[in-house]
Amino acid sequence: MHFFRMILHLLRSRRRSAREIWDTYSLPMRVHLGEIDIFMHLNNGKYFSIMDLGRLDMMVRSGAWQAMRDRGWTGVVSAETISFRKSLKFRQRYNLETKVCGIDERTVFFEQRMVVDGEIFARAFVATRLISENGPLTRDDLVDAFGVPENEPELPDWIHDWRRDNALPSTRRPAWSSWN
Image 1 (cartoon, rainbow, N blue to C red):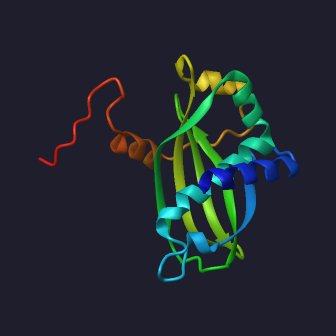
Image 2 (cartoon, one colour; image 1 turned 180 degrees about the horizontal axis):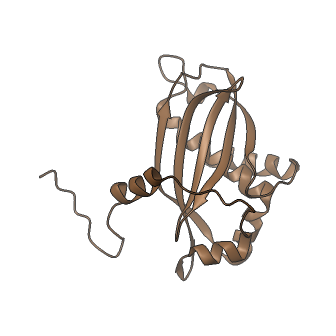
């Protein structure tokens, strides 16, 4: 189901106004029946799937989606964290806000918020990597393709710490599951 919703948003985003990749994006949304839990609010497991739609909207409207496709690049999420303030209830309208909050040597970081009438209900930080058939891309590859903003956002220290402390071993090394 999520795949079809992404295709729908891909088509809708193509009709929305073009923006710069470094802008803040806002996508009007509503809590649907398939997203709620038994308590009639947005299920915590749905937030990151919905946030995919905000990043897709950003990529399509900024031209990054086409640039990635032209180069044979794909994106993968490497880490994400979320904080909840208030519940989004069934049929409630909200805006999904998305912004690139920085880039390090190999990762693009997004901040995403679910906002109702200007008030943050949930906020997430998502670390993503872009990959080509030759392997992961570097910061230089990304800057060559998308440029650098006039005032490039500086990542807070806690994001570097979170990324380092939360990371699993490289895919080139084993990562055996052991609870000891």
